Length: 209
Image 1 (tube, helix red, strand yellow):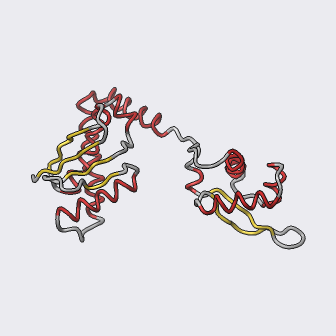
Image 2 (cartoon, helix red, strand yellow):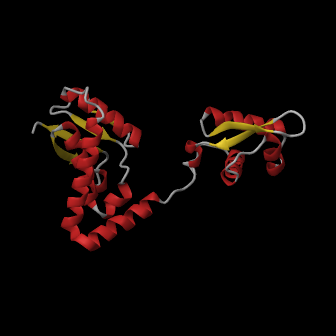
Image 3 (cartoon, helix red, strand yellow):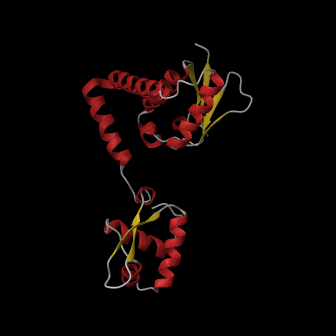
């Protein structure tokens, strides 16, 4: 779990993870063995971080009790073995089609995704507009990407590689990124620096095709 919450809040989040329909303050208080006021304080903090949200109320014989549940963002705090599953897929394709076949699949997939994203933004006309939107999309995907200031030709610099573990074992994984960036912008992409090859960042230069 990402270390952005305290021990007691982690315990609270785990309870909500196990109780998908939600839990009341009273039930959380009993399970955690802390006061209702302490539970409310933790819930308020977690709501501010959008990790917990309020659901429906349930009858209690008196005043209806508020239910709290885990948000999608809260669920993402718990470990998910995406990289393990992705590695299984990559290995299976490589065994079936060989290294060249894997590269072709990655390029085709990246091209398809890049084209789909481009078609969602027909308003983008200039290279600068495309790069700004592309950096925004990459930021949303977790690349921590920005258009490099003053770079000529222009470049996007990413401080995080979302496929880092895969790319360390299979450097051809980067072909997905290159194909996506190229199909989105219509530019030839030069991978100037790569974290999977001991770089500090991933730096993509956009040359005119």
